[in-house]
Length: 244
Ligand SMILES: NC(=O)c1ccc[n+]([C@@H]2O[C@H](COP(=O)([O-])OP(=O)(O)OC[C@H]3O[C@@H](n4cnc5c(N)ncnc54)[C@H](OP(=O)(O)O)[C@@H]3O)[C@@H](O)[C@H]2O)c1
Image (cartoon, rainbow, N blue to C red):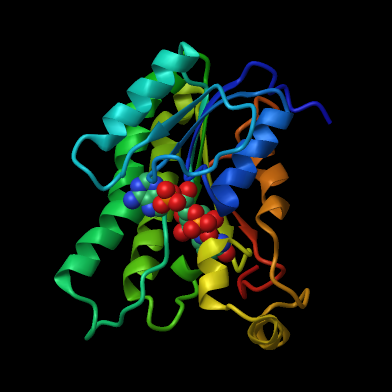
């Protein structure tokens, strides 16, 4: 299937690792012009990117610098993929004020700012936005109150924005992983035995996924080939979610 991504100008955050990196790579293979963004200077991004931007999205003004750099490099913006984010350990009683601020900044507020700053550019040709949320936003993971809450907020944010911009031809969706074997998931489940035990109990397909298994769906959702799907969440979770 030709996704029509040839020359489609896309900004991908979280492009040095895991799901964001896999999506950036897929988009490049499909012919898109991609600017990757991440925090750690020198972090490895896929080959073939138009440009790389290194900013900590939690820092003041970072989202503006990221979007400005992408627009300057690409001459505009047709799509944005917000993949920078992470799970944070903590319960109602143990999560500190600082953890709440950090988790909400990274997983929710930075996404709101990136969407706000991108939309005027996406409007030019009727663009696409994709937000990486999480299964844990709807089916809370124990001891992860901050990221569970932030990801639920990010899904509500994307749904709301999808309605605000639909008349401009902009489509906004979420992709919600269950357990894809990125750096942070490997850190939480370091051994094959732990992963097998968890998968046997919680993942109907019986294994953790690979980040690359999410990438084709992300590419379709942010492509011009997607013309009618907006305000939706696609679960990439091997059947883990309990909802329909
Ligand atoms: N993997 C899963 O199963 C899973 C499950 C649920 C949700 N998700 C969501 O999917 C997205 C990707 O997750 P992943 O597991 O693939 O993560 P990952 O491998 O840990 O990669 C995270 C990416 O985000 C960037 N990032 C993190 N903090 C940042 C900051 N403060 N400023 C700028 N960039 C930052 C990282 O850049 P640096 O390396 O430079 O820090 C890296 O490129 C996240 O939003 C995550 O919450 C993933």
